[in-house]
Length: 92
Image (cartoon, rainbow, N blue to C red):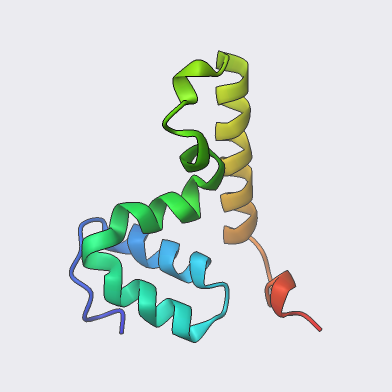
């Protein structure tokens, strides 16, 4: 599935698809199939979930609040990237 994907920033998009799927093979297949047209949205959901929810009004937030959102998104992505074992959702 991954070899057939032709998209800008392919490694980053593939990582985002894997993160968003969270072990769900059907979700992974769907995101990979849509990656060429929706790569920005896929990356946004994986890397910037809190920022993308507020991006159209982010300029109305204080600099401190903007930084808090950015740091929270960074922390959640790094936690996923460095985890070991099955995801919490898939654990018994």
